[in-house]
Image 1 (cartoon, rainbow, N blue to C red):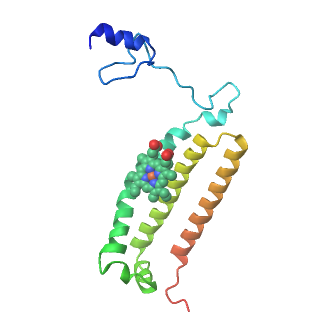
Image 2 (cartoon, helix red, strand yellow):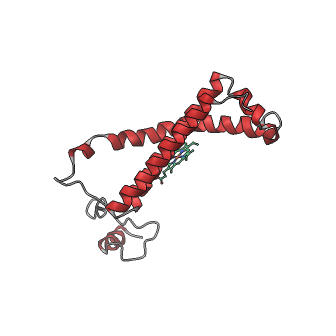
Image 3 (cartoon, rainbow, N blue to C red):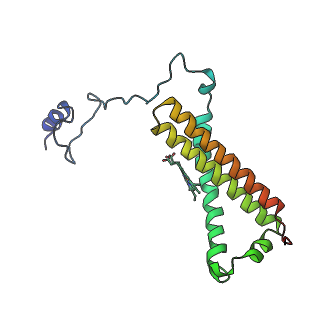
Length: 165
Ligand code: HEM
């Protein structure tokens, strides 16, 4: 296709079926700007103008990298090595949690997976729940479940009693 034809297609604002060699947008025909769903205005509270979202974005990447190691190691030990799943039982858990190393491993995995998963779901809720009330209550439910699970899990890891009757 010639350059003239390409420009003609772009002028059409994408109405024509795009083909591989047609540039829909260029310097003279920039892509339309998509407004964010809830734009910041002068009324937006100051508290939401910090860089929390940037830190949360970074946390998702960093926790993701650490989780790869923790989760794959966990799966390898629990499901593959030493006879696979059949070895898992009370004695196996008691043996592992006798070591501070595995306590810290499991604690880190619990905290990172819960915070990573909760922050991911927070993003999904913010993106998809349109009504303020719906967003608020879904996030309250999410935060309650997260705090409950993290606290209960932490308590179990540190108070586990191998001699329980
Ligand atoms: C195994 C290692 C993992 C890696 C490398 C990883 C990586 C990531 C990254 C980079 C994101 C951000 C995506 C974005 O912002 O577009 C993300 C989002 C998310 N992750 Fe993970 N993750 C891992 C494990 C987990 C686990 C264990 C959970 C659940 C507990 C989880 C739940 C989520 C959720 C709900 C989101 C949000 C999805 C979305 O925004 O559409 N991830 N993950």
